[in-house]
Amino acid sequence: MRKILLFFIVIIPFLGFSQQDEEVHSIYFEFDKYNLKPEQADGVVNFVKKLDTTKVESIEIFGYCDDRGKDAYNYKLSTNRATTVKNKLVEKGIKNKIIITIEGKGRILIDEDVLDNVPEVRSKNRRVDVVVNYKPVVVSHLGIPHLYEQLPKNPVVGDRIYLDDVLFERGSSNLTFKAKKQLDFIARQLYRFPKLEFEIQGHVCCTPYHTEAIDRATKKRELSINRAERVFKYFSSKKIAKSRMKTIGLGNSQPLGKGSQFDRRVELVITKI
Image 1 (tube, rainbow, N blue to C red):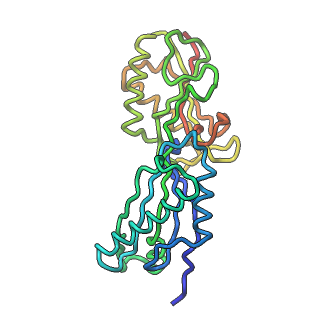
Image 2: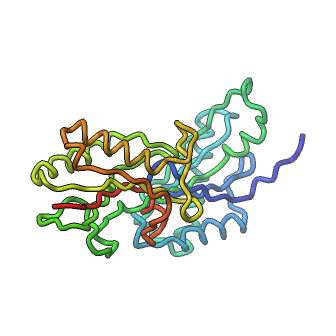
Image 3: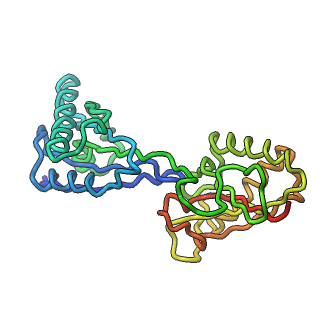
């Protein structure tokens, strides 16, 4: 059987929705071991030390095992793995209070009948995930003039409303429950300004400059306009007159310059009062 080296480290950003709210650093262990090799220890410490601590809310550490062995033993082994990583971080100066969870999850079950490479899958299940949770985005902290989280009391032409809860899965224009709740709130605000007209702007990130992203549902490069159109249709269902709204897809042409997590967005831009 081919021997698999298990002391490599990867960083996996979670990109399932429009703003990055967590990031995972995974450390892989040899079978039945929980000690850290020097390169593993250096890797996880450097990963955490490079984080912008002003944006980090908390760190959680979860240990796992493969599917072999008894449950009680695997829970103990996975907990030892998580604790070893936590102790190394604290030893290197990471503040204990920011680490809110150290938990052994035990074994990860697999179906050997449907997997092509069982040894490789097992090797990836013998791991610790260091999960960094980021603080929620606060638009007012970006310091961008005329960019708001909701309609201001006295809106003027050119004001921009950043819909920070209108979050989409990657490659999707489907609205989440949380997104609909924010749009409901904005719709109630719009009722107070019946003459106000606005443009719904869809944006994407992580594509070459001025390039549109592909919508998984249609297989076409139209993701930003589809996101804008989805908001248009939702507002229309809430009795906002269609004549008050226009839509445009801007792709990746207007990054905020504050990081990609801010660029997967929909904005409303006031065009007439």
